[in-house]
Amino acid sequence: MVTKISPRRADYAWFRPITSRWMDNDVYGHVNNAHYYSYFDTVINQYLIERGGLDINSSPVVGFVVSSSCDFFRPVAYPDDLQVGLRVDRTGKSSVHYGVALFAAGDDAARAAGMVVHVFVDRGTSRPVQIPEPIRQALQAIAGGARPRP
Image 1 (cartoon, rainbow, N blue to C red):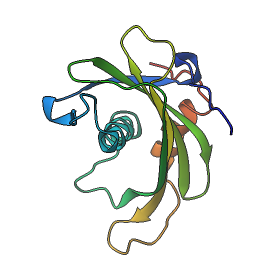
Image 2 (cartoon, rainbow, N blue to C red):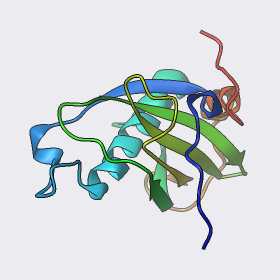
Image 3 (cartoon, rainbow, N blue to C red):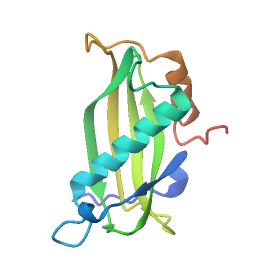
């Protein structure tokens, strides 16, 4: 059996707080695993909007999630203060592989870590297209955990 090691904060380039909600907790008293994906998706799209200029309402190009995974190391629960770390592990012509991790306040080790793959597509046809240049530049700014410029 392979034991995975929890990533560290230094492995990620961009962080945003996430507010857990009472309803995120499950019967076991911790945030249900399905909510982690929602946290990851929220922070990725926040980055694309803030740094890449993505207009989620009218941009001709949008990102579709085509793959995702998550490894869980330690639970979190409402009302923990949480942050999601983001980096870009690989970019292609029309796709990007993100590394994402969830941290509790004061923790250096991630409570959960995973990956998400976006394929950028034409909004009307859903066919893959090249990543728009402003988005590509924003993705390059956090490639491999590099710290983005303000």
